[in-house]
Image 1 (cartoon, rainbow, N blue to C red):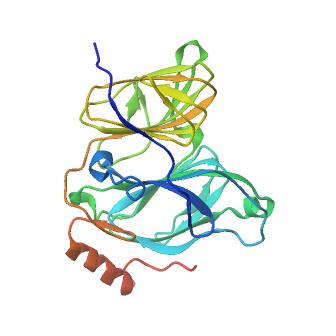
Image 2: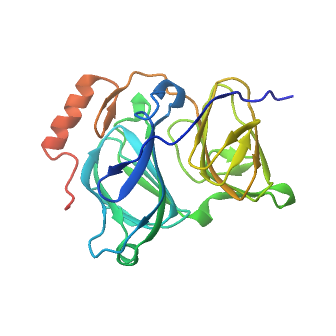
Length: 291
């Protein structure tokens, strides 16, 4: 019989701050709750809880900025985000979609509210993750995976309890489309009121659940909307009961037990590598992208 995965903490959302002028985020980690060793391979979690943006003729967002040594994963729940990068990739992330960008050896990037959404305004809700890359993959060529909601692996839960949309990894034989450089499980879960979900995830994996909407009970502990459930590396079984219609983001991954050197948009293994990233950015080796 699988033993329950013990909960370390149910974290309330940290105070919100603005990233650029288009993203009002709660930074759960690494700044909100300094638990990097407990969340690897996920280095950063910025959660834009629901906010209403008024109409504007000038799209809000974040201008051109570099990345090296990790991946950014953006998940849209409400609103629409456009993006461009110096590797020639561009597109729009609609509700339910995922943008999985591997910065790798270096890329310039910008992201902003899609033009039609900017003109109309409306509710906006997003998640952005930074996923660390193993040392051997930090200088991999940049790439982009655009994952539409319909392309996620889909599992319908018994008794009409809801659905599990698999982004990465697999759940009960259903595979997610995302390519990852280390073992990762990432699920977009939609539960109906009184719906239940049972997960079995490796004890050694770092695991958390973000409650995007609704209110749930996780292994007997209450978790309201906008809270993050952090698990200990003990046990494997997770049982979720939804008190109302709920949306969850399940994150679980094998830790990358390597040194980290982090400075701004660079996530490397040594200070010397960070200095090289700064130099390469300054000499134009990340490409060109107009602001």
